[in-house]
Length: 239
Image 1: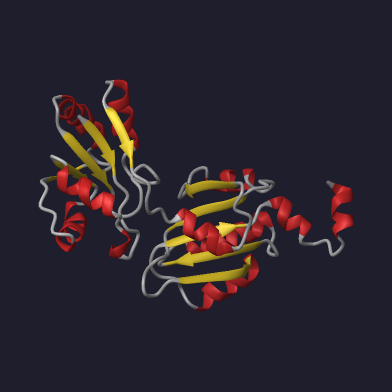
Image 2: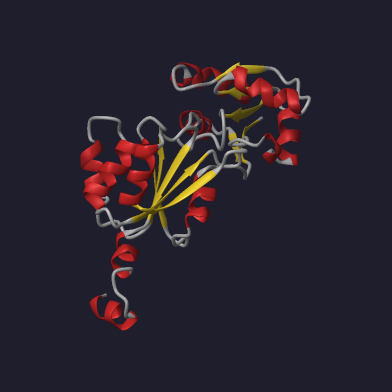
């Protein structure tokens, strides 16, 4: 009896690992965020394991039932539409419920949009802050303001329809000269990594509205401040 957390490709279907294919074939049940989208992936790899839905609208109600099934000797593989379940996707509640009931949980390594975006940005990767999706309305301004002095590289997920507004808010709070990278359609045919200051990116996306899956990476306060000093010794004197 075990719950497997199985990352799925964030775009390119070839990014599914050999181990993930094996687990999806051998599991008694696949728990999918959207069974229609997962069916496309399963068809490509000729996987015919039975599926059931597990998404944000039913995960509270179904968690106890699913844990019970796994505890009775079943193995289940949890997948989201793209990437690793639990990272801005359903999964946390089921994992926690399994742990509380003594059901073994095993997470496979695999795809997640935040890591390729971080590497592509060219900003420091040794320490970073993942913020996921910011609140759409209530608490959004407060959350952005709280990050003004965050020294680590920051990573955000955003809807393409809110990307421009998000960049404008970042420029207003962090300063227009703060550098950022907007990663679009990672791993897909039309992948784009737009780099520049927040002001430059605002102008870019005012002219052309972004489309597809978006990840925004913003340099941390310490590195942004350091970039304003031409002399390394001058920077060290203020640390």
